[in-house]
Image (cartoon, rainbow, N blue to C red; front, side, top):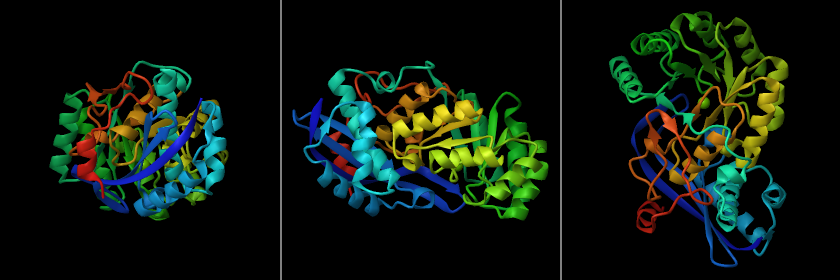
Length: 366
Ligand SMILES: [Mg+2]
């Protein structure tokens, strides 16, 4: 199909409109790495991964170095078809799923452009026209959070995720209950502890989780503690989701076998790309697990476009999609995908369907 002429890692830092507070980190800027791939005809594809040291162990500098290492090995490599991409990218370096995802997204963008197909077609076709957007409630006083939840629901949002695990179980329970009371039934509300609880706190939250009216509880304890996750699942009146714990296809199976999660979050930066997310999504559907598709807080219009394409392709998406470009104060693409009336639709046009704005890119390069 084409040969790779060059792969360039471009570290960027883009401010968020306001900080997102979660257990383990408060995010104020998107410190990401973009990938620009050029083929032998001069056509260009774009990819991106957010740095997420607490999620996959990769820092911005580490990803940039890994991508440069991969670029040397992929120079002049021939891309023949989509299915061959993991076999091309995988052997260039061990681990580093975020770096691999950025390179894969850029190559997929290029394949889409070369074949004239939007990524949702290239990746298997649309299962739905649009996907409900999940939006975070993560910071401010209780009154501010309740007002934010009301405002989002008024805009059409039907899925909210309350970030918990920082202020203690009692406060977290009160926040969840207040937000449910404010928005009423019919809105999906999840609580994400980002591993912020120990066993005692997690079980204490679980004992009263159903009373608050939340629909599921995400990653209450450490990713490797599947025994306590399973204990929470037995004790909790609401389903348990895994996120940090779902670092591979095998770990999805293990959570299922141990009764440690009824579903969970799929991210390109954990699994190493869009193709692995689709494979994982198909497995979760077969296992009867619910899927949340998630961008990392926060990604520009490049990785968010990848999320928007995946959101219409995944077979099961009962726990909605968080696309994070809307949290950014500015973007490097001319028209980043937006949430409209609560829903996400992918850009039209070949590949990702986005256009990078050179001046904006120069502004945010680090
Ligand atoms: Mg999470």
